[in-house]
Image (cartoon, rainbow, N blue to C red; front, side, top):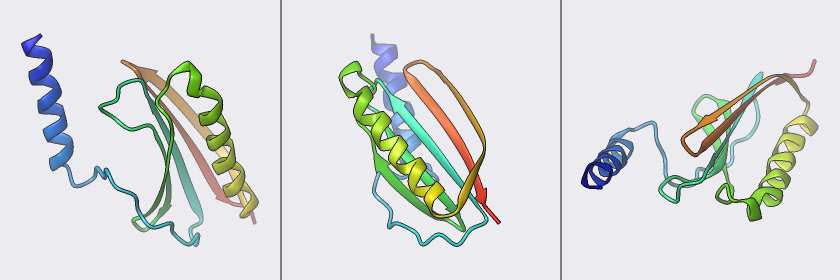
Length: 117
């Protein structure tokens, strides 16, 4: 039990010190990129947030909070994910690739959109 606590604290400290990890909200970006990445993180653990991250490139990101990955929240999360994917599509972007995977209580999906010309 002590080892698990030590590992959890160590991971949390590493995440806090990592400049690429943000626990706050970012300002929604104006879309001017040729490619947009949408990544969903759904977590069982309360130590990590479930969220959608939309990357417009040029360090412009938008975050949408999701509920934890419990059965009672599945429908809410699917509705939010669907809303974001449709929002990007309606702004003239076409889905060209998607990938997903999971393990240890985390499920991640990545969607790649390009400007439909």
